[in-house]
Image (cartoon, rainbow, N blue to C red; front, side, top):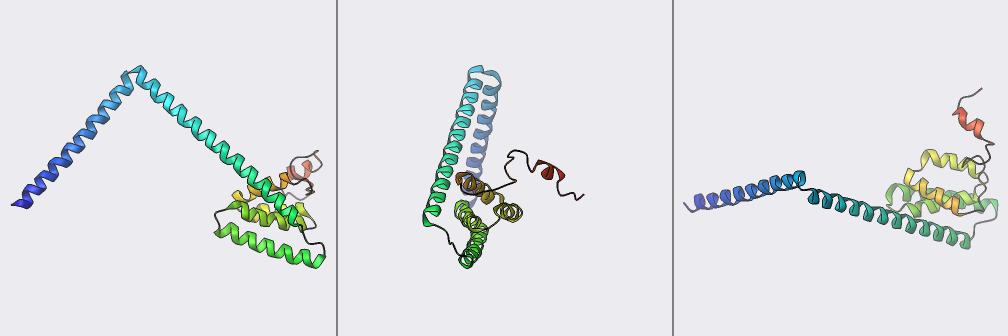
Length: 177
């Protein structure tokens, strides 16, 4: 008999909670539809939340830009190999590490830094960038683009919409004459 009382109490409690929730939902909907001040306060709160989200996104973007600049500066301070054999080995090592980090690591800056270092020792950076464009994940590629923009010593021709020298080629989209 005690189990019947317990189930009755539980059912009554659940029923009361559901009824209370439905009553609050109906009251909220009524307030939302009829009270102009309530609607204004809801809109104000939504705008405030949007403003907070926008400022947090801007702060995160600025923090990432600073981290990218710092990583580029540190890489330039470390220096790069000068002999052909050292450059080749360094390139292969950095590309392998960048691929590993971009597949398994959540931090795009570390992976992009490896690809950036490989780009610095590659003889034709614009060719390598077109390869990266096809193989590197987009978030890592975006960070890599910021790194390239932060380093004025990288000579990249045909990218970035310069003086229009490559505009005819880029408008062809791979169509051969």
